[in-house]
Image (cartoon, rainbow, N blue to C red):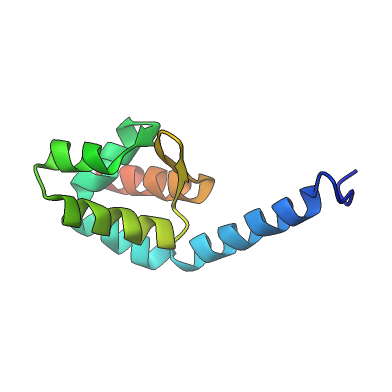
Length: 105
């Protein structure tokens, strides 16, 4: 069933594995990013879906800065675009948990 062309689960699984590898390779970059911009990380820990406008409003920053934060996270495969905003990938959820644990100790 996974190799059936009409469903193409094999290709989807391959894409997800590749995205996970990219995300893991960006671990250090993202940990530095969320250490430098903890307020951005907090928004993603508190909300299931985040829009660029949410970042603008909650941090009182301009659209360009908010888009830059989104671009860093999206290009690192930490977030994925949906119809209603950006959702965290499993890799980003894991990194956010590690960051929270480090900041709580």
